[in-house]
Length: 177
Image 1 (cartoon, rainbow, N blue to C red):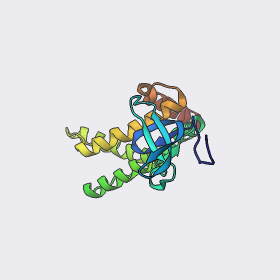
Image 2: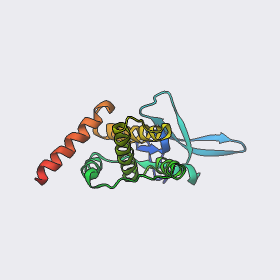
Image 3: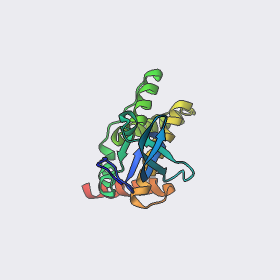
Image 4: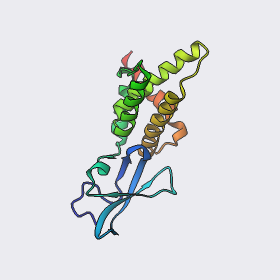
């Protein structure tokens, strides 16, 4: 059953901060006094979870993004060295903006955020300090979202994604020389 919905059964999507999910069915279930049609999502990396998204709830369906293809991921990785960072000095403003980015699912913004947090982490290490706990949480959550999506699309275990990214960037820089 697809019924003209933008997503179909077996599509792989990224759903908000829940990450990479497969649409296992589109089904109707009674809700209060009417029948509601839902996308049934199964997170790929949290097998015990099931997410029901009403197809007519724009606020929730807007959180569903088609997962990137392996070619799109490769292009994104190759663009990494050219991406600016987005460090925001004001902590309150940074928390608001980084939370927005996590919720948006915008991969380019996630990468810029990760780069900024990585470089800030290195600066902190150089002076014997650690990242602020909220920054560390944003860093880990953004990495999890990207690594899960990359792992699903590329068929590479999550713990090997950083090595894969490093390898692609090294190959791209070797080709530029």
